[in-house]
Amino acid sequence: MGITIILGLIAVFVIAFALMGFKIIQQAETMVIERLGKYSRTLPAGINIIWPIIDRPRSTVWRDGVRGNLTYKSTIDLRETVYEFPKQNVITKDNVATEINAIIYFQITAPVKAVYEISNLPDAIEKLTQTTLRNVIGEMDLDQTLTSRDTINGKLRSVLDEATHKWGVKVSRVELQDINPPQHIREAMEKQMQAERSKRASILESEGKKASQVLESEGLKTAEINKADGEKQAMILIAEGQAQARIRTAQGEAEAIQKITQAIGSTKSDPVNYLIAVRYIDKLGEMVSGKDNKVIYMPYEATGILSSIGGIKELLTSTNK
Image (cartoon, rainbow, N blue to C red):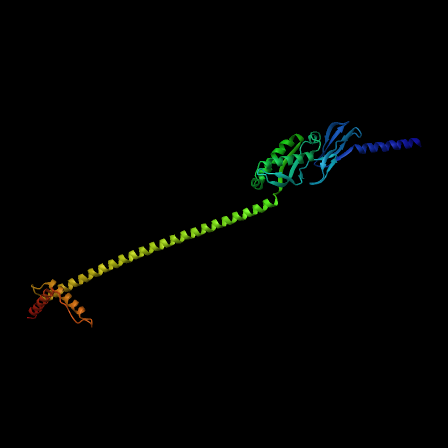
């Protein structure tokens, strides 16, 4: 009976010992095993067997969640991890206190270094990020800080990646979530922004008026030029028409005089005297056509005209004979 109890206890101990030696590691996780306090090996994902009591996993400090508390874990997560740090006050180059919080994305690439090269990896990364952020922001003005997030992120990632390389950590990227200047600075910036927008609106409005006036003046100039060209062409056409009319009138009168001279048939007839006499008679008719004309002054040269009329009479008399 006693032997049976002893064998049963031995079986229970063996089973418990074997169960203690089984370690199941999840995918994308690993475990650092120490044998008698010294590093032995790193367990991969899956089922692993260790010697209980002799071998034991090394516990590491880890952060529970994005903003969780620090905890001790026997496994190491090999996935990319995100840490969101609390807001902190930094001073810019122009002495403006600004509140900034950041997010860092990193991944453990060497579990052994992450365990043995640094005692508290999450806290070390947080403090390193905060001090690096203070140094980077301290070299920039407030305006540069607000408009150069990509530059700040690049500088932070470069410095953190270089510093955490010996810890077996790869920093993939760093992002700034919020940049909050003091309230009075924000109010001043809003006023400056409104003034700048009003200035740009005034400039655009004045440029629009200027362009409108230029276009209007160019339109008036073109209209005046076109009007002057039209008047010029009209005057040229009128002058050409008058010249053609005078030429045609002179040609008609010349033909008429020639025909009259031929009809008279006298060699003594002078067409010039005839033309002068006809024109003179026409003017005399215009002179006496008004109802208020009472006195008619005959010019001194009228005797010559009358002699021409007499000559016409003689021509007509000779023709009748």
